[in-house]
Length: 306
Image (cartoon, rainbow, N blue to C red; front, side):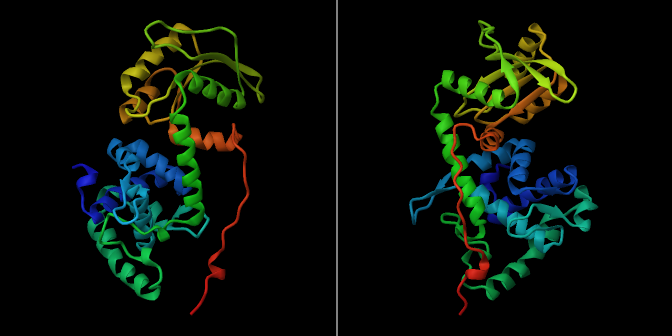
């Protein structure tokens, strides 16, 4: 069933096992942003849910319902004793979460229903926190449940992705080459282009400073604002890589890759996939065409007491 058609609890429930799965596969600890990226890679329906925007009928503001359901799912897992985290720490599996058998887990009974008394208790103990219990209406979710730092980061990332989406294809190729250059790839003047658009948008070399090994690298750039990158485009890129005897390829998009595209990238010559989420994180890491600004937010200590 389409996630959008599920009940409020159903939308939260569909995120529980994927969150636990990626945490177990990662050894038990990930940042929130890493979990979001990995669960959207796992399931195309979750990826579509994560991209869907809604507009509040009360305020007119747009929001992503996925962000709120994701945070509710984390709280449910916290109440169930499967994870723990603090305001700014990574999400970490408890010992119970590490050894949990996901195949045998009854999400509805063991997580969703078991967590409801905790939501009621939290709502009663902190009446000012409107986000402490799941809202009945899906039209205007309360943003108080989101971490302040996360909201700031998400807002910047959305602006960055929106700016990238407005680039012309040629500018996006130049932008992608600039990013790979920051990451150690030296592009040559060799212009490589295949006539049927299954081509290569950059050809260069990467030298590993540890073992002095030089590898041939080719890149493909696709600025997609609607459809995701699918398996045929990966297969086409693999053919182009083989033609130019590349040691590995880098496929960059501002959108996302379907599950089948990711599987195809693992079956042939080595391909590194960089989607929109990876792209903004790399731009931030290498400070590519951005200016970092330091700011502060108040901790809970400064909240007024009555």
